[in-house]
Length: 168
Image 1 (cartoon, rainbow, N blue to C red):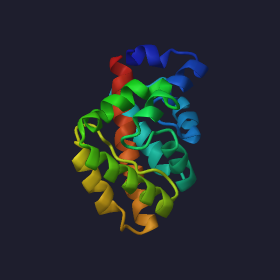
Image 2 (image 1 turned 45 degrees about the vertical axis):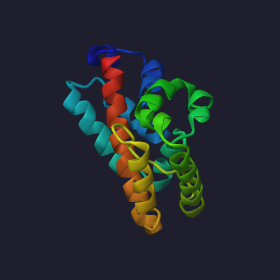
Image 3 (image 1 turned 30 degrees about the vertical axis):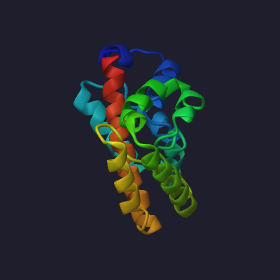
Image 4 (image 1 turned 120 degrees about the vertical axis):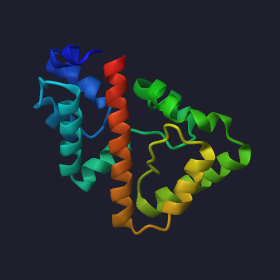
């Protein structure tokens, strides 16, 4: 889709397109109000500005729209509308060793128990071992620090998905 096409979608269709990029309801609603946008830089700038002004609850809502790293079954089932994008983002996990996959699963469980949401990382270009290392490095973070880190990772994911949306 081009930026012009996105600009001129009706509101419900544009909302659906934006929801594929970020699952936070308030982000989608506020993004709808910036259209039409003049160029990609404006779109990306608005996306970041709105994201940064959301609450912790909004960020957590966005996190619920992602499968756990390495959960390939969830990619296919719960996240069908973005499964192709998420599968590409997590592509390296499919080549991971069984030991790495087990460690990711255990780490994901520990992370979710500690923080109350799944481990969020911009997985594009990262191997499963790199993601495991990041998970293990972030697990000791205090909750308020980790929420900011996870929100920053979500911002990266949203940017990549907006770029994919405009190249589809």
